[in-house]
Image (cartoon, rainbow, N blue to C red; front, side, top):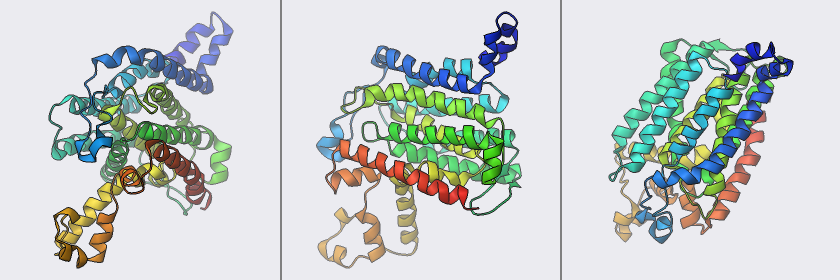
Length: 373
């Protein structure tokens, strides 16, 4: 809105031309979203449902019981008018935002439900919104993609781009959702990813000299997507103020699904879907590892192997179990549960060590995937 008003307001006072500055809009959106969420979220979370805890994790899993959950609804709703204020809007951006808010509402309704939604129901809804986001990103980029280690770029037809990128979005969204199990973990890791991704869109993809130097496609509209990522990151930074351990509120599926979908969409906007390994390595391993584990167990079952949980086996059966099946069952997922249960890390240790791992892995993988071409 401010971007469109610049031409009209400039006639009355010259400095209003700064409203066309993407840097100003980015900074304004980020700081305003953080401040609004920080101040207003405590007044709204009393209307949220309360978390029931996770009895399956024992005493530690019940620490969150009774806390407001689903507060991702309030964070995203508070951020929405700020996005409409600072973001230069287009049909693809509006369409993607619509899909993200549909995913958020579905997550919130699941948070409110006395009986959690089944995997099939959630999976189908996730698939629909992921395909929707993939369609709007395709309409914005025209199916343009580039890949690591190879010069040049290609254009994928819609019938190949939308389902393949929709699957990638599905994995990222659910990996982010599965990472939401320790106070501040999913939010902190995702915000780090969003900040780095926004910087890449603004300073590399959106700036021709740097894009040409790195041999990546230039897109001057990438800076507008950076505004979207930074504004949302600012809003969830305001939420993290209250989510720091011991947390006062939880974002639930409403927030984690929204963040995961935005993170995946931001990576698609770069034109290189493989960059998700650079911008969210720990999120993928922590949350996505569980999906890999399920697929492996199903594959082993098809091969005729016994994949029952170790607790259901007799001592002799455990001893004679296939070594590959034994290795898969040895690691818990999400990985933060394994670190807490098997390595006896505290929540604070999980958060700090996962953040450190992501901070070190991001630049390393980024250089491998972008510079070496």
